[in-house]
Image (cartoon, rainbow, N blue to C red; front, side, top):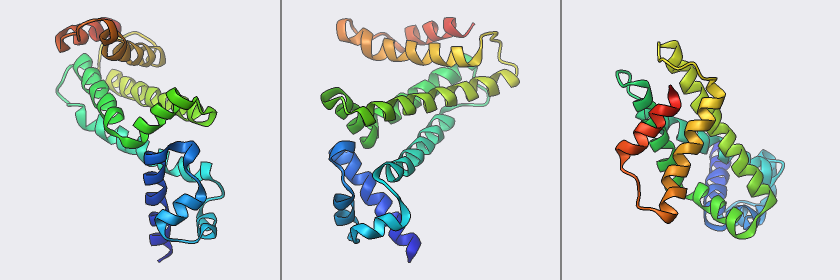
Amino acid sequence: MIVDKKERIIEAAAMSFSQFGFKATTMASVAKIAKVAKGTIYTFFDSKESLFSTILERTMKQLRQAADAAIQEEAAFHENIQAMLDAILGFRESHQLLIKLSQEAKELGTVEVLGILTQVERLILDYIKSVIVRERAKGAATNRDPELLAFLVYKTYIALIYDWERQHEPLPKETITEIIRTQIH
């Protein structure tokens, strides 16, 4: 019963954060959606931030699972990096909570949300770094520092997908793959 209430609260909070954003979500609104007393939330979470942290942790676990599923054992290193990046960005573009946080950061510049998005990026970069380390251990040929390489391929990929397309025709997938391949070696 207690676990059910906690899960109901987490689900209600995830829904509220996804619909209204971080700033507009209150413990009272979460309680209303979860159909529990506001005090019940404090039985499990000491603040809105700790509740959000639980949701973010679950979201990042889902993101890693989506990225892991894109990696193929027999694929080349650069192909796996490309597939992983595709999965990460696809997840970010389709996950309502991450979309809402990005909107809130752009429109309101909420300090907490900017910090959260920095944290999300750090977690993504750490994940990419771990994949690079794992691929290198299997014999992938790259001499670059894994942390630097993670940063380079992620930022390059985002720039080619979003920034380039603001002023140019979208690049063919093959061109993006070739650019990422040059980053790796």
